Image 1 (tube, rainbow, N blue to C red):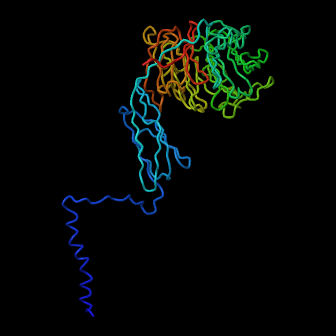
Image 2: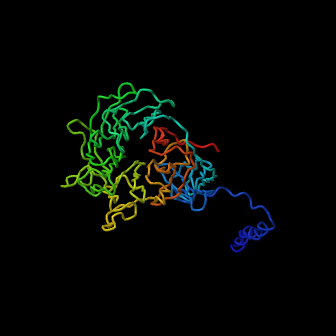
Image 3: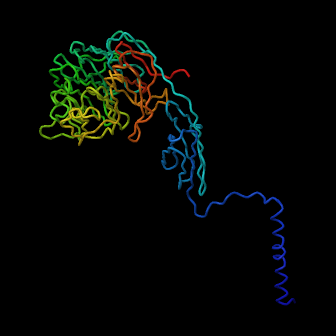
Length: 489
């Protein structure tokens, strides 16, 4: 038998030979072979997703939404790696981004990425830019002082109001000869009065209610509910129920004119300060007056005996000497306001110098927009210009010399239609004196992408309108309605 020492030496020889051969195998450009897949780190149960965006101008934010298992959702504004994700398939959807009049379209717009335990998946999005151009397409003409255009959600017809008291229907591009409703006998049209706006009930499909804002022969502001008839193109003229009547004596201007339902389901209306230069009655700052205010009422269970109730949360409910209907104060003549999701855009016509747009959360309660202490961000009453507690506008413009920039803002809507995706999120407005079409983007408290769109002259722009698909329209003093459409490239 071999000695223990010899046995140990012999057993060590193969390992020694292998050790001596290793350097020769590693040098001289020899192939190291094909590595196998990276092993999953021991105990790993989550993974990562790297989203890479490119092609946007410096400072511009991407618009990307990632969704995945367990109701996961994350919005991104640029390249980012999402960590500790549950394993599975994720959807990466990118929306167009508009910067300075150019729309940057993502490629691909949607894609899937599979996240595995311990690994990092990658989704790449490349943006490419094309200019956004719009124009106006005439829809109907020869109307009698059109003041408003609207439609129930999803309806393809257009409901156009004529100031003397008629609601007309445009169907398939044609103006129907018989009005949907005619209340001309009860409408005052002196000064700035008339039939001024209309709002469909959020439950219109089932209850058939709609609401009109008009001035009566005594110059009162009237909100009245009507019911659509069995014929979809005719309302029941006998169904009227007066919701609210606001006295407006002395002057024939500053009637306000907007009625709309908010995201909370309540009815809002914007009243003017009663007219006269500088708010001589002091209504804007008088919390015991309904003029110069944004009002909010609950009409869901309206009856002749109790046409509305005060919603919970109205700031001055049950306060002596203050009107419970008031939601916000300090307005001069709010010529159009609109809701965009949870945001409120409210334009207020100025006195001598400034036109303004107020933007904020729709549920912001008890705001005071400043009139007649302020005109925009300018002190109007210099002797008592105390700004404490006032909400100043998010956007304003000066009239300029000889009203070169305008003199009476016509507020509009944030574009949420589908025909021109590059306009999404842009607020459109005009000015009665200048007839332009302008827009801006409000985001994070900043006003960006201000733009004037070069449209053909259509006369004084009285109002904007929005159809059942979210597309926008302009109504002019010439009796025309124009739709904002994509221009040929």
